[in-house]
Length: 171
Image (cartoon, rainbow, N blue to C red):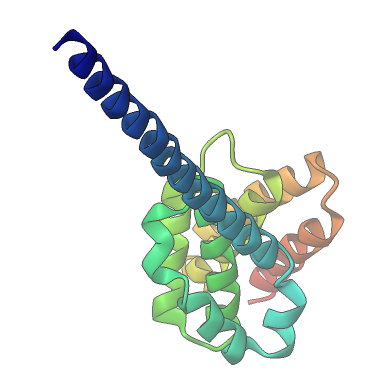
């Protein structure tokens, strides 16, 4: 009797030890695959600037395909996604969608947000204010974008914000 109990115990233990690592391995493989997909999406969003300017509608459609995974994205990836979406909407004259996207992006900005994203989003917020004839608010936001861009040596963004302020002053 003692011998049979020991055999049963060894069998159960063996089965358990064999199946558990497999399920852990499959979970690990799934997690690794999800991480790779997130990295792929992040890299794509980072390098999408030229594509958005060349073919904004096609790029916008590609961006929208990721909308259903937005809540699963890390915060930085969400910010890049919103930035690229706002860029495309601005170029396509989808101003009501653009305004909503900018408000959503502004809500996510914090001290950890990279300067390039902050400056871009503030420039977009300034554009939204200018289109609503809120010139004082627009100028303040463009100045904020300029100061961030200047501090981080983002010359291109600094010049865009400065141009927008000059345009507002000409009105």
